[in-house]
Image (cartoon, rainbow, N blue to C red):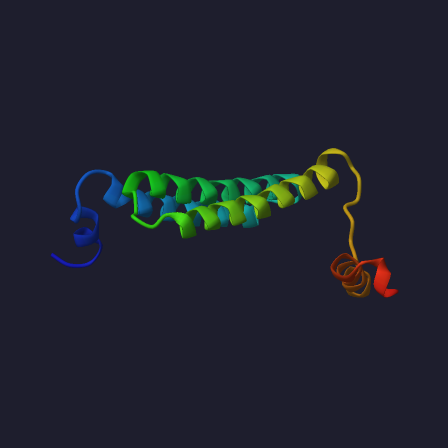
Amino acid sequence: MSGVGHILKSGSGSGSRAWLLYLTLGIVATGVYFLLSGAAQDTLYDLIGVSSVAAVLVGLWWYRPSYRLPWYVLAVAQSTFVAGDITYNIYENVLGIPALRWSGRRRAGAVRRSLFGRRCGI
C-alpha cells in the first residue's frame, strides 16, 4: 500500500488522521477567506489563528511529548499575536476607531526611548 491510503491507515485511532482533517479544514478556510471581505474576512482570520493555538495545545495533550516547553512557548507566542490581531479588529470593525498606524521613524524613536530612557537625552 502506498500514497495517501497508506498514510490514512497508518497509526492507531483517530489521532493519526486528525492532522489530515485539520489540514483539510485549513485549506477550505483559506479558500473561503479570499471570498470574504471586511469584518467577515478579519473574523475568519482570527478564528484560523485561534485554531492554530488550539491545535498545538490539543497536540500536546494527545501526544504528551517528553519535552513540552517549546510547544508551550509556541502556543503562547501565537496566542499573543492572535490577541493583538483581535484587539486591532475590534478597534477597526466594532468600535469604528482607526487603529494606530506608526511610521517607522516614530516606532524607532519609541523603541529608543523605551530601551534607553529619557536620561540619555534621546
